[in-house]
Structure formats: structure tokens, C-alpha cells
Length: 298
Image (cartoon, rainbow, N blue to C red):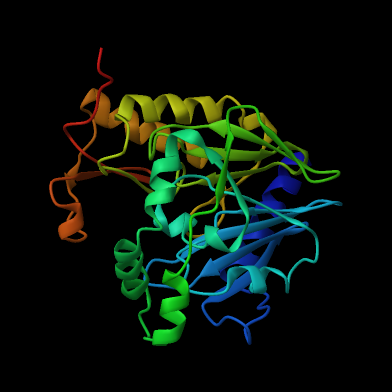
């Protein structure tokens, strides 16, 4: 019976996320679409060239914002259509598609290993190129663009493995998962059996970027999360819809097949940006990686 209930919960979350989203606050920000994916949990999809997920998790006393997206809209105003509680904001890692709206909030919690990347997001020239590349419909006016560029980095607050966000009747624990970036984290809501995974777990995970750790390190992070898998049923990833926890075993199998040579990687030809990288599929999981960055340095 418990297995049936879990399966129904996952099916409900996926249906909310991908089939029947509850659209909220669209008059304020057309780039955002919000769906209720679990009890007091909303997934906000920032609809740009490569959509990214932002999560809002409510407790009794406060709400936790997990990542802030590309920065192409007024995220704080949009979130205030979903919750009136005080907001706490955390970055799962320091990439610009997850932290570019950090400046709308006074403090951002993140792992210190990614502080430099988060601060680099606020370089004016880099920020302009990134925002314009995601403004696929050319909706941003020159004045709006200037407002997006005229921002300062937020105050960063360091968190590490085991840190707990207590929202009042709801707690989320930080799990360090270096790999995609040095300071990548997941957030475990064990009381509600949900893992918020950032880019540690997506249907395709990028491990070819210059800041990525070797695949051996990433494998250890996946295995670390798998050891906690009795505490969650649903994975809320950084991109696309919810995943069942069994997806972790496919990710682990994929990385192992790369490391032991049993996989069948092919060149990852998505764009010039991915040149030189390979991609390997194992069941439902795919990992794109740098073939020269497989093993930990001794």
C-alpha cells in the first residue's frame, strides 16, 4: 500500500508540473509559470531558451526560495503572488541560470566554494550578454535592461553539509554534492520526502565545464545522496519535471560505465560550447563530460 501511495504522489507531482500547471501571477511576469507540485511547494519555471526551475517551499513561519533563475523578470514580485511569508533564499550552486536574480534579495545562502562564481554573475558585461541571449522574444526594453544591469551582488551567507533551514514545522537539510560545481548542494525535505537536487540530478547533467570536478568526485556525491534515499521519494531537479528516486541508480550506472569503459559515449554536439565533450547514456540518465577529467588527482 505504501508503494502505491508513493507512486500516486510522484504521478501527481509530474502531472502538475508538465500537464496541468496552475498558472499564477502571469499579469506581473509573463516569463514565469508557477505550478503547485507538492503540499506548500511551488515550482516556478522561467521560460527562456533553456527553462530553469525555481522552487518556493512554505513552512509555518517562512518560505524558502531555492535558486533565482536567469534574472529576466521581477522574481520577488512574482513570488509574493504565491506566498506572503518572509523569504529565505538559497542557491544550489553558482551558475548564472540559478543565481542571476540574487540581487533582489538582501541575503543569499550558498556554499562558500561557489561564492566567486555567484559574485561573477554580477559582472555588467557578462550579465548583459547572458540576459539578452535568454530574451528570445525581445520583450525586455532598454530601460528594463538597464535596471537589470544596475545591481550589486547580494550579501552571501555560507552554509555547509548538515545545515538545516527551519521554516517552522518544515526543515530542509543541506547535503554537499561537489561535481557539477565545487559548491553544489541538494536540499532534503525528509519530513515531506522530497529532494531538491539543483543540477546534481537532471536527465542530462553537465560535467564538462571548466569548474566541474572529476567524474570520480561526482560519483561519490551521487552515492552519498543514494545512501539517503530511504528519506525521499521525489527528486525536484534544476531543469525539467520531477523524477522518481530510482533515477539516481541510472545516474550512478551511467557514471560507472564511463569510468570502467563499458559505456558507449559519443561526441556531444549540442553547440560550439560543448565542443570536445562526450555524452553517455545509461537507461534514462545521460552525462555530458570532459574525457580528460575523469579521475581524482592523487
